[in-house]
Structure formats: C-alpha cells, structure tokens
Amino acid sequence: MKLQTNIPLQPQQHNQIDYNAKVMLLGSCFSENIGGKFNYFKFQSNVNPFGILFHPVAIENLVTRSINEDFYSEEELIYNNEVYSCFDVHSKLNSSTQKDLLRTLNNSIKSTHQQLKDATHIIITLGTAWVYRYIASDKIVANCHKVPQKQFLKELLPIDDILASIENTIALIRSVNPKANFIFTVSPVRHLKDGFVENTQSKSHLLSAIHQVVDPRHQQYYFPSYEIMMDELRDYRFYNSDMIHPSDLAIDYIWEKFKTVWLSEDAQQVLDNVKQIQSGLAHKPFNPDSEAHQKFQMKLNERIEVLQTEYPHMNFNL
Image (cartoon, rainbow, N blue to C red):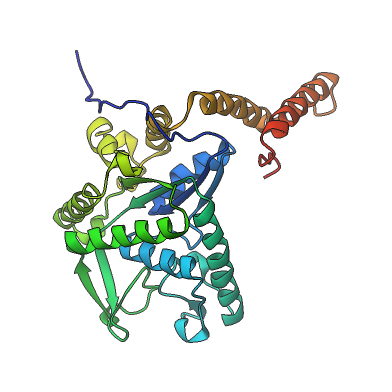
C-alpha cells in the first residue's frame, strides 16, 4: 500500500556544494532553517545578514545597496516604540541608539558586498508576494516595525514585477560574481495572516516568476522545498504547534532531500564525520574526570585537528 507521494529528485550533475564552496542564504525564515544546517555541519556559509526578508523587492534592495556600497544615513532610520529601526531590514537589527543601528547596517553592507563577490552558491528563498508600501515615502518596506498600519498600503506584487526584481538581483550579483550559482526556492511557511486564498495566490505569483528565470545552462536552479512540504509532508505532525511553520522533523526531511540533490559525495562523507564530532561534543559525561572520558576527549580532539588541517575554516568552538 502506497501511503505517500514522492517528488522525483536526482543529484545535481554540475556545480554541487562541497566544503570548499561558499554559500550565502537570503530570504524568509526557511533560509534560517536550512542555513542552520549549513552552520551546524561547518560549511562556509552566511545567512541573512540583514535578518529575515520575506519578499523579492526587499532582497533586491539590500543586494543593490550592498553591491553599490550605498551606506545608510540617519535620515533613513525611524524611531518608534523607543527603538531605532530601518524599514529595509528585520527588527532583529533594531537598536536603542541611532549610532549603533547605523554601525550595524553599514557593517552589514560591507560584509555582504564581499560575501556576494565570493559566494559560489546563493540560495534565495521567497516567502510572500504580499508587500507593504510606506505612504510617506511611497517605498515598499521589508518590515513595518509595528508602525501603525494606516501608514501603509498593502499590495500583491504582480508576477511581472517579481520577475523583474529577481532578474535585477541576479544581474547585480553577476556584475561582481559572474560564476555564482543561484538556487531559488519558495518557503513552505504559509502566510495565513494574509488569508488562506491570498496565501495561495501569493505563492502562485512567486512560483510563476521564479520558473521564468530557472535555467540550469545559466546556473539558475530551483529546489522544491514548498512542493516537498505540500505533497510529501501533508500531515499536521510535520508542523509546529502553530500549524503554519514546519516542525524540526519536516526541516530535517527537507534538508535530507536537499543533501541528495546538492551536496557532493565527498561533502556528504565529510558531513558524516562532522556529525559524529558534533554528537561527541554534545555528549554529557557522567564523570568528566574519568580516564575513559579523557581518552574519549583526546580522540575527539584528534579528529577535529585532522578535519581542520584540511578545512581550516571549521571552528567547533562556536
């Protein structure tokens, strides 16, 4: 009896990710989930330097500013609820002082500029096509920062606008990094605050636009995170208690699928070694001073040293 549908996936034939790759992940909170896996398994990766970005215009804006090193000024900050914020970035960058926020924003622009130039793989996860336009400036924002809703207009980005935004992002990055591989995906997180029908409409717009730029001949790919969640994991046991976000089990499942497609065989072997080391580091000994534990710790350190000799970027103290 067949109780589950499975999306047929094949290992990527070219440009797979190994431990020499430099991966950058941008976009929705699902980028953070997958980015957490890259970090845990000690790949060279960077995730959302400006915090979570849900829609393509927000990503395009910050890529543009980073590529051009267009630094922020005091006039672009807002003060609300006793903190300084910027409409272009996530609230996790908020600060109690204007000076600290400007320093954070502009340091992120500097580091992102270099990361975009160096990245071998850029994974972009889009979450929604619904956006908010700040009436006072007529600009689409990345985050409203709890500013009263009457100061914004809510809009659904047309497919053509999403397509143009994605194409602009690709072109900007390719202007400084022509060899980068782009992997697009749509977040499986449902934005039900917009409405059930509206969420489906939003995801449809994103999917329609993305598939117009997918072209493996130009190193532009699609990974079906959304489809795996909707078609293979269509059971509420794969969701968190909010019934919206994927559970840890679902994230692990999608990561395993991603590994199958995008990680090279050598990378998967190294990953297994890293996993064993991470498990060893997480081990809680009954008696830390025992001879057995000291031997265990010595062997573990030896394994770490061997890995770090080949991959100096690995840091198991983080």
